[in-house]
Length: 371
Image (cartoon, rainbow, N blue to C red):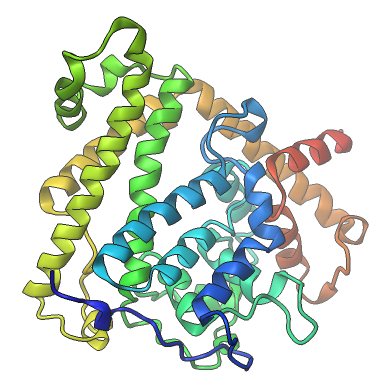
């Protein structure tokens, strides 16, 4: 196979605040290690993926999801000979900014912050790694590499909402080191599509475990039915519960293979020869084939109908929204009572930072104490 390592990001442009190079670790290894050792990463183990953390020990949380995304991203990056350390770092960090109670919590907090710049979990991830983590004497945040910051802010491609960025982070804080209009690296694109692969497949696994739907429902989707049929004749009755694990493994493998093969085609078709060709291309180079794009849309529709719009899930989401809204209202009355080192300079952003950093169970406990 042709070596595409020249398309990967192995050399860093440095950090917003200068630090000397490390003798033993690359800048991207250091970024990964800083993420893993951060308090925000540890708190992800008690934050909702779909099911509130208090509901059971075996459902995925934000931290298990992030680790699974990193594993998929590493595999793809390794095969393509690009920087698997950077792909892993971006995957581990991409959900740091999530609120308690998943997307429902984000919707509620964004509504609470509507008059004060809003809330966005991707930008909140940047706030965490740039300002909110306190572990170093010489700077606030984690002082991650320019390439990692670029990949985080462009998780969904080039970033154009500069007004929103100014309100939540402040464009000047990037010191002109990022070009928001350019596309992002292959490593960042790999991390983003690995996120899709992970949550689509693992939400299915959790949905079946929660009895929101059955295997018989799942195999109404042709993609999963074809995988199931390949094992059906060898399945004994007592092994039926294991088949879902095999289906999910095969599904992930097939999706990864499709991404790799389609990315290689995109590199060829778009005449990608060097890194600048990637960031100057408006299309995502790392992508599914049309066939798998259709499969992905069918899976997302299935999950929305069977899982995300399930009455019990919606009820719990609505309860999470009420908790977030109540906390925001009460903390706004006496922020100094709740927030250590509270600063009046940006009162509501500080409250947003505080609430978004909570775990599910801490938010629930604090809410109970307010009653």
